[in-house]
Length: 314
Image (cartoon, rainbow, N blue to C red; front, side):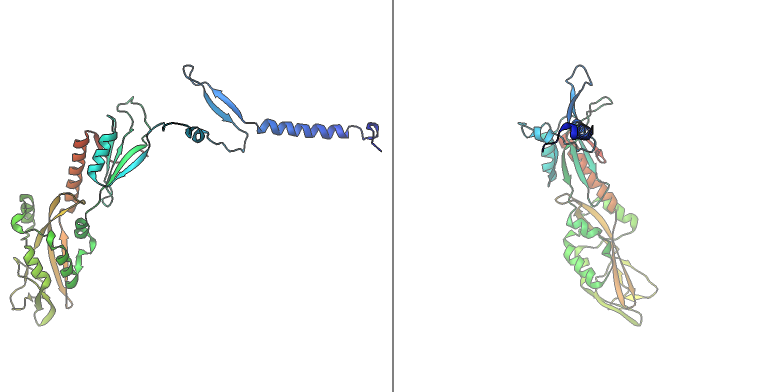
C-alpha cells in the first residue's frame, strides 16, 4: 500500500530534502572556479586571475598556452663553452650594449667567466631584465700548475723526489733563459738557480754521509750553495755537500694558456738515516692573479663589454 502524505511524520521529508539541497548548492558554489579581471592600469588590458576554493591547487595555464607559441617569449638558458675563444665568439654573437661579463674567480680551484646577455639596463632608472640568458666559461687549470702547487711537494723521499723531477723536468728552465723580473726576485731571495741537467743529477744519485754515520745512499750533483746543519754532511768524496738553492720553471696557469716563470726553492733535511726533499714554488698567488687579470682583460677587449669581478644576481 502506498503511503500517503498524511501518514508521514509532519515536516520530516521536507526538512531532509531542504538540508540536502542546501549542501549541494553550497558545494557547487564553493567548488566553482571563477575568472576575475583586475584593472591595474586603465591604459592596458586588465589582468585575469583565477579564484579557487580554499584547499584547492592553483595550476598555471601558461605551459598549456606556450605549447601553441610559434617561438619562445624570450631567450633563456646557459651555454657552457670549453675554450675561451668559443666563449668570446658566443658573447659577440648574442650580446647587446647592456650585456655584462662577470669574472667569478674567488675560488682559485674553479674560476669562471659568466656573460649575462639580458642584464639590467644601465643607469639608476634603467629597466630591469630577467637575466636568464647566459654563457659560461670554466677555466681549466693546467696539469702543470696542479703538479707544482700541490701540497705534497714537501718532505718527499729520495724516490718520490727523483720520480717527480724526472716527470716534470721539461718544465725546468735553463738559468740563462729566465727574465729580468725573475732574476731580480731570485737575487733578493739569495737563490742560485740550477739547470735541468743538474737537477737530473740531483735526482739520480750522490752518496751523502754524515760524520761517522751513513745517512743515505743517493745521487746528487754539486751546487752553488752549502747547507749547514748540526751534523757535518759531506758527499761521497768527503767534500762539504752543496746543493742548488733552487731552480726556475715555466708553466701555464690554465690549459693552453701562456707559460709563466716561477722560482722554486730547493731544500733538504737529513735526519735519522734518511733524506727528505722540499720543493717550494714562489710567487704562486701573484702569478695566478696575473694570469687571471690578463685573461679577463683580453676578453673585455675582444667583446668590448663591461667586465666585473664577482657574481651576477641569483
